[in-house]
Amino acid sequence: MKARKDFLPFSRPDIGEGEIEKVTACLRSGWITTGPLCAAFEEGFSRLTGAKGALSLSSATAGMHLLLRALEIGEGDEVITPSLTFASTVNMIALAGAAPVFADVHYGTLNMDPGSMEERITARTKAVVPVHFAGAPADMARILEIAGRHGLAVIEDAAHAVGTTFGGTHAGGFGRPAVFSFHPIKNITTGEGGMITLSDPELERKLRLLRFHGIERDAWKRYGKGGNPEYDIASPGFKYNMTDLHAAIGLAQLERVDALNGRRKSLAERYLDGLSDVAGIDLPGVPPYPHGHPWHLFVVKVTGMPRDRFFQRLSEFNVGYGLHFPAAHRLRYVRERYGETPGGLLKETERAAERIVSLPLFPGMSFDDVDYVCDAIREILKNG
Ligand SMILES: Cc1ncc(COP(=O)(O)O)c(C=O)c1O
Image 1 (cartoon, rainbow, N blue to C red):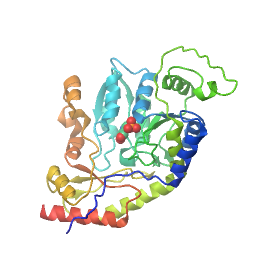
Image 2: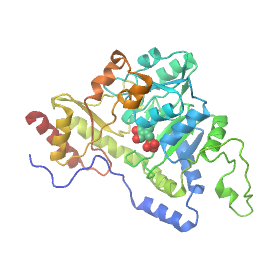
Image 3: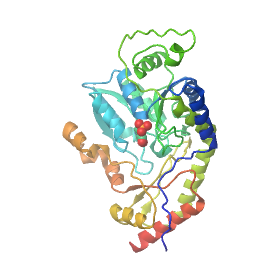
Image 4: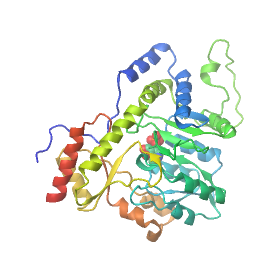
């Protein structure tokens, strides 16, 4: 099989004329930082998720930082999360002064195993952070039930979960805080950006202050005609606001979210079909409960050859790839600061971590692109 001439990237944002028009209109409007477009984006996002409130942010990482702070999680506390997650979550837990504690995942879906989560609860545990891995929902019913029994906060890491539903409820719509990401590879993007959704007005008030210096009123209202430019600060805050330029992109993406996710789904189905008879690869598992899966990532596990060699061969075929994620419990500072997690506790994580590979998946891909990747994988696993 001959390698294609052009490189097929692992991901590419889908930016259309709508996004360009909205950004241009914002640039011409005279107001480009946090303002009415952020407010409209927040409103649209609340509608999508069913959450009562939404706060637009500079990133999901910022959202996790703010939530841990607002929930007063810090020194001496433990937060349970899967090890197969982006380092940002673990970093924020560590920077808050708390200790990350890792629960195992199901090998198929790579979602947190609620049984393992429960085993890791101690008197110090304050919160659990399930990840809706690749867009497949974590088992929210069991996680909420266990967390409720132990009096723990639940923060959904919904970075992959625009379009994710569990039993008819959208991620972020469970009455608990959730954090979404709009990084360029995500299902909808704002360039960089994030959103907290939540349904607790008191927590929302705290977060709004923490998001912007601790200042009560929005700048776009303070600087408007007749606005009062004075401010007072009761408690210091960060600067994690989104800008209207970013929200302009987000609003245009939100208008197309069903089409963008629908396209991802049909590409994922094409992969599932195209790779179903290939030996040496495990396909993504599907959650056993009613759900909606927007296929943020298509993660396979390579069992038929060493992964380094598989990466190298994909490169030779001009195909991009990703790794989501290097297991967090093996990060150097995590091992040095918190000690080794006994291997037996993370058996499925360890089994998956060596083998996972994210294949190209983005709405601008064609079925021919998917077929090409499937043929390349078939050839690689057959001939090495
Ligand atoms: C699971 C997970 N959590 C959190 C994040 C952080 O998102 P952001 O880059 O918007 O801070 C990401 C982003 O890649 C992620 O994949």
